[in-house]
Image (cartoon, rainbow, N blue to C red; front, side, top):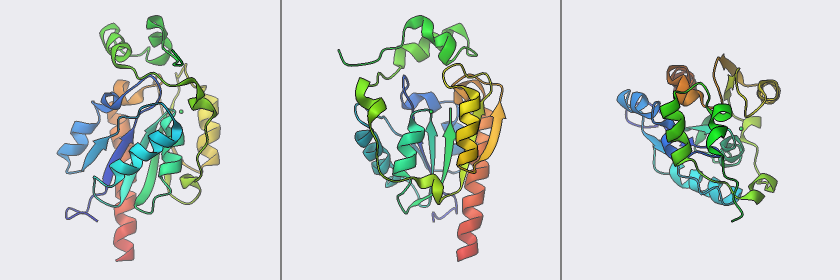
Length: 208
């Protein structure tokens, strides 16, 4: 536990994104005294992205809250098996899969035209085989979990998100968002992370 009693927070981005996709969320959490780091996943292999998150876990206070967006839900499910991880927050699921410029209306259509152009300019490009890889470990089976469902998501079907969240027995928050609530509704995302962090702090205090 850190000296200020707050857990560390590690963000993991999804496909067609990079660590900057959490730029509207990180400053507010830092201002509240949380140690925060956002990984830069290569999107080459699932194993490599899990390793990147595991390295980041060691750079912040323990216990750790992992926050994964979209594909990174799979990443934190594996990386979350680390004993330092106390909770998980899921946000919506030349040999590369590029997003077409007009694809942003499906990916982040509730952002301004200017912001959509920025998202496309910095988007990460996953390897084709990334979708077929698996890693051992299912952290949500043994650790508390929170899940944000984007009700207007056109990248991942919201009903699928709800199904997955219920299977995890997650605390579910729904928001009128596209696939990127951390950009279009950052206050909602920050509030969910605060609740997760508070629950982890209270659990740690109870064991002291």
